[in-house]
Amino acid sequence: MNHDIAEGRWKQMLGKAKAAWGELTDDDLTKAEGRVEKLTGLIQERYGKTRQQAELEVRRFFDSNRDF
Image (tube, rainbow, N blue to C red; front, side):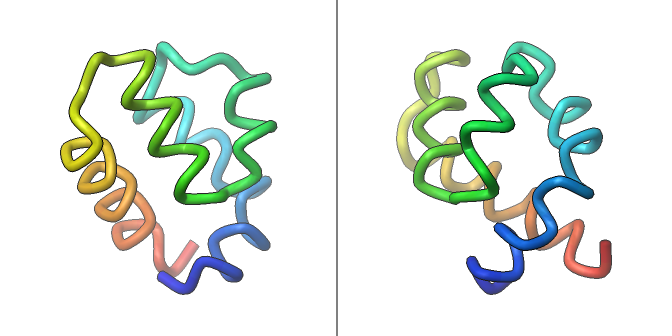
């Protein structure tokens, strides 16, 4: 998914993101603003994942919500 589109649709996708990453707070997700790098870093930090694992999760999340 195009990063600009992801950021533009982020408010609509917050509920799905919260379901996908329940350990992230609403504030975390709001601050991420759909930015892939920010969201990847938050997931990496909160879940103790490698950068590569977190990037893959974020990529899959945005790809699966392409038509949102």
